[in-house]
Image (cartoon, rainbow, N blue to C red; front, side, top):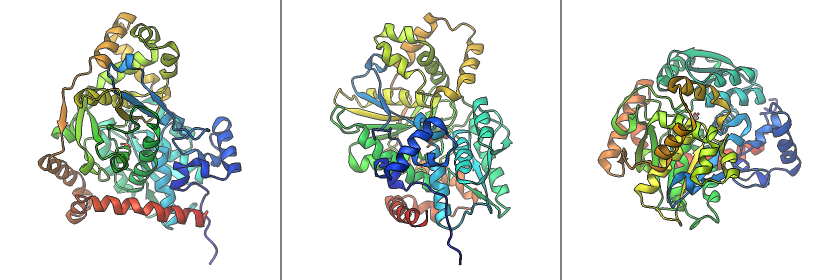
Length: 453
Ligand SMILES: Cc1ncc(COP(=O)(O)O)c(C=O)c1O
């Protein structure tokens, strides 16, 4: 039998420790990141680390957060294609390749998404030589569709916006009847969990070295697929006192209260408890007003003078300008609220994530300006103070008790039994051993990727 070649790409270990990649490959990859984003060598840039092997992050100015604790935001915009969602997309595809289930030239890849995962899928498929179809709602930011088309994927649009992701899943399940189609199902498949628990989780642990007490008191993440929040599982292993808070739009509080509704925070709040969400480690659910994230984004992007007036150094204000999107602001507001709620002090660290940067939200801010008509500096100043400095401890739900967890298990059943998952499988997720077994597979995949590439 002819030897099966899979496309070249990194192991989980190489994504966490890019300094272990062959020096020539790493140098070529770093050059390509700046010069040619479509060069397949960019697969070796799927990492939180910069060229000096440091986690890309910002410690937010306290003049902006108004809290004593250090709020550290890990920056996803440095990943190729502009968001860390490329990590789960690659991990899911490469696992399928080494397992012999997905073959170039044979299979078409489906990517159900509300945008960034779709961008990640189209990008990865372009680099690894697969045809891709991204299935997403028709009412997301214009920049998302442009990027997906640029990377050469087809778009299959379903009606609605962020909270209509279930329609994309239904469409995907219908398209999967064709055996040529293989889905990178971010809400269901565990490579997404593995990438974030191992790569994001350990990068978060590294990111706080030398800051405060060097530990993590709280990790906040607004789930879309609930991949990123898996970092919390690794953080808790290292720092058992750490609390994990899932953030949701106030307008779509599915985890907190079973509520559903339309909202403006693209990428999160998808009206479900995803299959891969390990709710055992979700200690709190926190609701964030959706328009606060857009106003907060406007303040950070266009309110440099206001930020300076509040005491933020000019160089920090300028550096922050392009680092966040609405979900990043949501994560920051959740971090501020939790720092207040947990009464954290200057030695304590709260870690959170900016999935992507400002580049895909110009149209969202233009829409805000149309809606509010007058967005003069005095308005921005009011927003900055109200949204960041006066963030309240309202709408924080404690999910540490067994009865509260039960609500989340029931939500998961409601969302996933209908897609053919059995009660036994869902019940097996109620024990941490399920998640640890899934995690352990990383070490087999490391070996398989090395052998086959
Ligand atoms: C902008 C943005 N923020 C946050 C998330 C949520 O991340 P996760 O799917 O890992 O929960 C996503 C997911 O696509 C996203 O696109």
